Length: 225
Image (tube, rainbow, N blue to C red):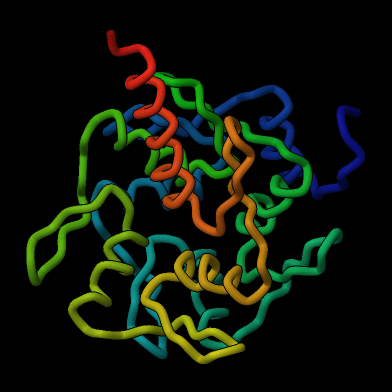
């Protein structure tokens, strides 16, 4: 036996294809192949656009039943997948898998251009746009475009005025979570960004970047005849 998982005869035959790397069910459109016929059926909907599984709460539709099951947890608040290290919980197993890499340090998704590596495939997809220049997420108000959907979400708040991230100390509110994180350091005194030249430390990365330029200017002045 290759593994100790137990199955009925039919399921065993399907499972054994995983070990033998057999994928007898091929897509007629893109040639992608699958071990199970049901997986091919799900995949074909990415070509046809068919979404037969609809949410009874918000009517959002999905190509796969499993995706609907995951989505329903956003309404129920159920998070059945828990991290064994920090106990953080997730609605989807794939999210837990991605999260575990923050503990293990594993970064299986590498950029073919600059070799930068990522814990999540979606992060690699976002990163690749920095090389291609593709900005598929456009603001419906001012048409400004972004490489990441999350950046568009943050940007939209500049139009709506929404500031969902509030400081627990002084109640100052922010449009972006990263801005709240930077702000909290004004209360904690934490300065994680240090200059490699003079060791001066800063609460924000942008402040360090600005500071580094003072050293570059000094170097240019010294080298100027």
